[in-house]
Amino acid sequence: MNFNAFVKLFVPRDDSFFPLFEDGARVLIKAADLLKELMATETIEQRDPIIKQIKAAEHEGDDITHKIYQQLNKSFITPFDREDIQELTSYLDDVIDYINGSAQRIGLYKPKYIYPILKDLADVISEASKEIEFSIHGLRNSGKNHEKILQSCINLNTLENKADDLYHDGISNLFENEKDTIELIKNKEIIATLEKTVDMAEDVSDIIKTILIKLA
Image (cartoon, rainbow, N blue to C red; front, side):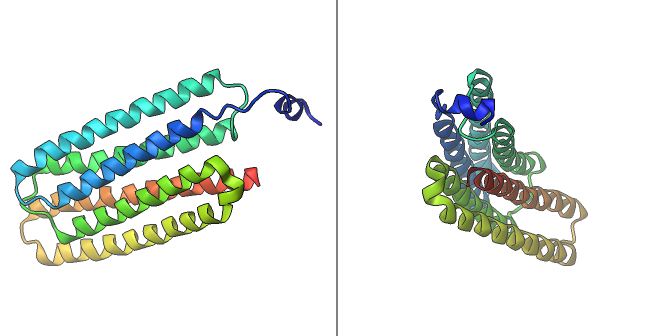
């Protein structure tokens, strides 16, 4: 038995990370719900308060990220590898950052109206956020929830593929139907950022799968 394994027999595992990750997932859900609300607006004036709320959620997510890193510096025995805690924290924060980035672009570029593709991608982001929340909650008892978490990760991969298809169809329709060059550039950038958000969500599922393999 190596030294680390020996120590783990006598030093209690620090489970304080689980509620922090769950708080991060809660903020992710909040940001994703606000993004859907933003896509349902009809005027530029309706958008500003929601964009500010998404920015506030992004700040809340940053605070949770800092708390996780602080806890990591204080903890001797962690529930899973320190490197995996760092990656899960970083990827989760990235998803919230990209949701905020999408919202900020809408606020900055002020597109004349919300294309259906933006609403469709926001719906996918919302679904992906729920899968992430489910997986993170399941990590408290990874042995019992192993198969359910894996299925959730598969669902996230399916959602990423769906987002890819929506992206390509949306860009094609945009170039075919939008005659205003400025509006085309604005919406292309927003669509790309939304699609990248789903890519970031899939990164979360990849690190969760890695954690499950190591814990098995």
